[in-house]
Length: 250
Image (cartoon, rainbow, N blue to C red; front, top):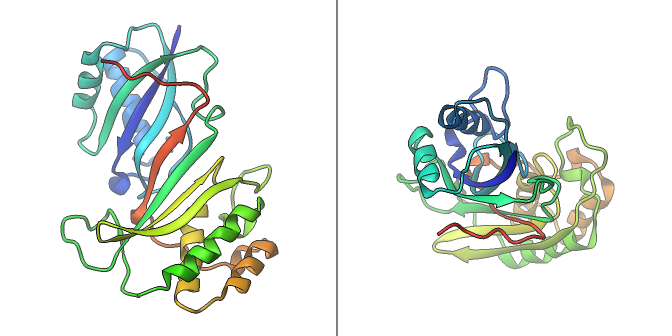
């Protein structure tokens, strides 16, 4: 058996998240189905992490084990022909048998995209926000995230985790191509964490919460003290990093 990593991108609008679920259409289920048709056998994939319903990914990695040679360029084309138009396999990599898409990932990055104008071409790819938040205040508050490691205050209440510790290495806001974009990177993320952080930072930008209040939210470890969770359509998983090199096929 050989272990492969698949690099995948998807528009999450029509899916109930990444992970296979009973009686729900998910990205992983569509990928598993396409692989089963191509390989003529049942295949199980394991992703670098889960994205919630409506969340997108420009880079997601999964691993799978099979006997077939998946490094032929025709395999990528064949898989994409079997997959829905809103899911794409970017590339396939042969890795060591012990390589693990989830446990070996040491950094994950997300972007949250906000538009101040209605965009008829991308209605489910950004959050339409009518306010004019104070970006400087939000960036000052965002830097506090790098000082802490317990983010229970930004986690969904009902979640199966051993702890709420995450190491955030980057968190900032910037205007990019008419979008207000929040960038954040960490070794791991809790369920609903980024959307709760964004919603709370927007309250800082709106003047509903000051910098000291934001820090107290983190210290208090109480989800009810944090701000609202913003809608899923503005959230993108954009980068997953590993300690080993993944060489693209030519």
